[in-house]
Image (tube, rainbow, N blue to C red; front, side):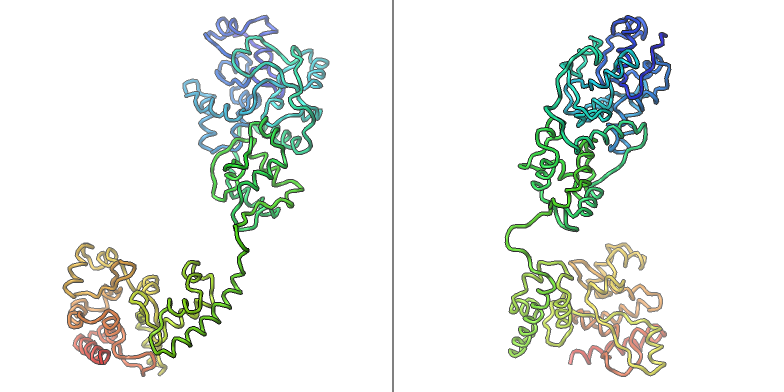
Length: 527
């Protein structure tokens, strides 16, 4: 096959093909039919396919052509790893689908309508090489200037579409007009240089930047307060002020303040939305700029500013204590809603996350465990199942053992209450058999969050289950709170002198003593 002159550094593949045709006096159709044995060959500005034939034509490796003379490294710089691999495979493999390749190129060159060149680069090429060529760096989105000579690029009337390639034009054959009226300034120069660097990165896996990367940049330069939301129109306005609305439109990265825009999407903390390379570079330049610290993009909710939570916590506690004193004079049990409503902080306590007002939460918990509290069934306190070793140690030392109290949520988290499936698995039953056991009174069932929960000691091998069921049948008609206390601690109170609990008696094998202690506890508690 005919060997054409290899591409110059930074030259587009299509430009090298055009130069080769001019050197050998071939038209594009003659090259296709007589040299490459291919009919209907087209030559867009950013052409890549058929890469294997072009590699043979220039006597080069296909991967080398793709890495140094195509827009693929730039187009995939911030794509996902899977997308990058699909694009490279589609370009190199002869039998792969070209859809990923075409989609990647089309998204990357959005905003480019015609070819561009630098007059000083053309003059240098003619004096040193005797010919000019189309440089990749001049065709990148957002590149309005030549990074070598810092001059505004000129745009031609030749579109990058397929039909224009048959003219076999090079930059020296066209005059062109400035692509923008004047130099765009340092910020666009930095964008052009960054674009050129990413175009020269070769075939490497992309940088997987997500929203947290740009969010950290914004917080570092104080453009967004940590943990606060961003305001879409402020972000859009900051981008417009930095780069200019007209130039953004010409670059194919227009921004509107009237709708959700691409800078806002990229700044969302958990965003993994892929965006074209130019938008990544623009946002990075914005957040790395020296004037970024003067830009505040933090969302400011309407209405008066919120008061500090610490001060509110102190105010709520003081008002709640007065409300408790006032309600205690009436002699009625106090509910959480009643005294917080009297204090004027029920809505704030209910609608803020738990822990927002720690001092107020401590006061609520203290009241719920006191004798003055009228606690709903879901929050009734139950004793934690005491550890037998701790009981024995306290008895040996002669100390008083204090039974720890907790809510049903606390007991679930501590593993003292188990769900139906876990309990059934430990008992060697199917979980659907738990409901009949509960109806027959053979097991203690405690409702939590509209789910049935069962005591973990029921499946403990130290306790005879038949004896537990026999004892529970005799007290099945009592409230859950009394049944739990009768089985776990008996008639003992937290301040009583220590003696053996019912569960301790059962663990020792004293089954009749266990049943008797449960009956004594019920008689004592019902009085």
